[in-house]
Length: 338
Image (tube, rainbow, N blue to C red; front, side):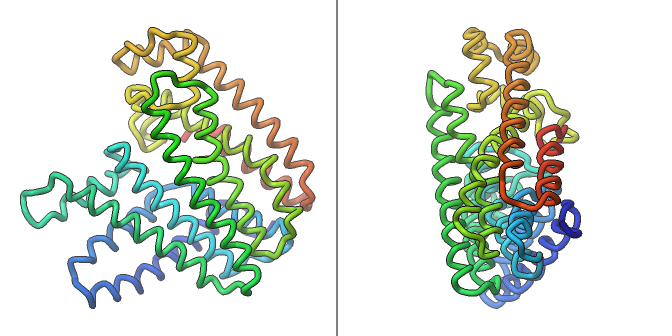
């Protein structure tokens, strides 16, 4: 599937495109007021932080799987997805009051230092919300200016707008279930579907296909693969959040358990060990997840979902080479340790 079957080339191209785009935006901001430059510096720093760049990679895969060639247009659309993801991460960190992201202080923490006086109580959060807004606005601009013919661009924008709505609604569901007294595995899976599976896997692939001019019949085959693959990806993320090496994951290990994040792992732990709700330390919470069998059940669910996703992939009407490369990527992401 050409040189874009691995993260490196796509990653480098996307970061280069975003850097050029933000350089132009920085020049425009400097004319307005030099104090705005701190926002541009933080956004560029955020996009350069280490990450999997999965959405751009899957958009490029979808484009090629639909028979198109990866060029400037789809790479710019992929860059739009990465900028959209930066918006989502900034927003998520403000909501969760997360201190770090991708091995660095979260944007609201870094921006707090830009306050011009000692009154920093909400400055960082307020600035981060606005920075996220900019990232969202500029993501749309990048896609609109990607150079595709009007008909293909309109098809791509329909997918993009569905993606934006789903991740926002999924985030709200995440907040709702975070504040429920009776978290269930079904609650967690519903959040995973819209906040992760659709947003991370299904819509990026469909965006790449739509921009290639693919028929609706091809786009309709994507959810069979994307939903189970995306949920498995999130369940792996939850396992790493609970038991992973913070040096590899870039976030405090066990913090999700301490904060009672509404993950499938935590929901299963609560069902098997209701007393876990009263535990206070990471070691106690990890022990509850392990000894109750919840962690092993999560691994079994990941394996089941992976098999379902790969079976659906093999039924998709794409070239054998494309199928093989997405299968390899899927296994690498689901079996990762960071």
